[in-house]
Image (cartoon, rainbow, N blue to C red; front, top):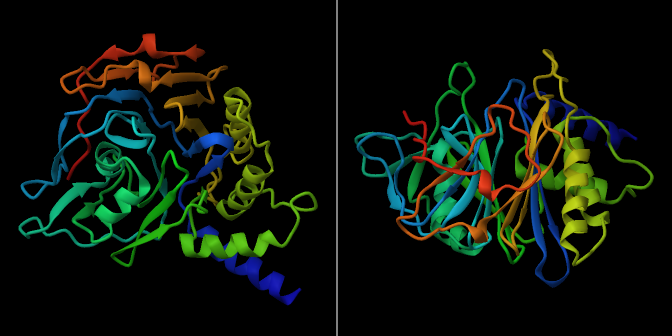
Length: 346
């Protein structure tokens, strides 16, 4: 009993530091079925649009003369935030990248006149989608910190942007990237299928170990807080059916991420970690299909990345969702050619 009290108290302290909430979970089914789901929880409206980017786009880190520069090797479909950042996406090799809030994040100091290149945090996920086809490839390239991730305040707020990055690939491998005390910490293991917000991932693993000994059919924590969402996602993603039926698998994974969502309209001034879920996505990494649902519209729609022209020189395509458009089913025809948005810099 004393141990349980200590656990709950420590978890409570961690959770109170959390600023915003999201959940990410990975499903592994038979015959190479891999699906990654995430929810986007935010206190205020967050304008999201979908974009399809071809190969060959020249990009910059948007931090001045010492900006990292690259050209995209892979095409991708992504969800933007305010058309200034990539927060979620799937590339043509089946790599998925998601950024979630982590208040404990502390990034290295960027020297604008120094030798090390920098990249705005708004482009961090896109850089990974543009350049890597597998988790192992990304970890190998990024472990020595070839650039500095540069953060700034969320536009129009006094909230400094603090994110961690999760990636998963078509083989079911996973990695979590966190900047703690100015140093990059990488957790790389195929077993790391769930991530929420605070605490840092090391401590999320401790929570998982604790709850692994308690049968989920007897008790699962039910609040909207990050630690509870982590436990529920970890239990349910293993409990849902193992199936080759894409329709059933996608429905099952959506049911898990919905279970970890916060009802729309709920927020708390005294508990800023509780924020309404705004949208959810499920990426089918085997078939390269990206499913999306906005909580303010009645249906789920999807994007088949295979059916887009991703060759170098092809047009970027945009699906505008910020005007409350309601979509159902395959939505490739609803995309329109558009110039790529500019990532928010400093």
